[in-house]
Image (cartoon, rainbow, N blue to C red; front, side):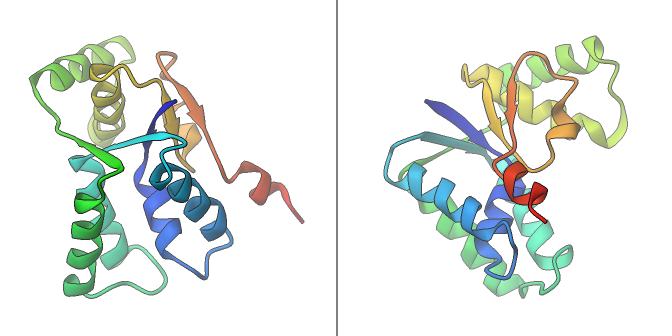
Length: 149
């Protein structure tokens, strides 16, 4: 099955102290074992750098963050997708259809990139951010973990 991985999957896989680490790391192991056909975009990798250097409890140094981004870029079992003209045109269709403005454009761009490659399963912790997009199926691999007492 072709899947697209959102930024937070990579963040939680890196953060060993997160209660969501195991689920994220297990998902990436399944991609690495080619049980799932994993995809992300260069946009997601850029967001990953931003998050791990500023928006986590223990931010990485720029040097460490670059190393982590390069590791993902070089991962052979993870397809990295550009935001090309087809993806941008699909994104513009989505923002028009769903009346999206501002920073939410970048979520639409993820969906546009997915649709440009016929990927309809998105794995993310931010399922609510993508709930408006009926064009894809959003899967939160952490939902069971979050529901535990």
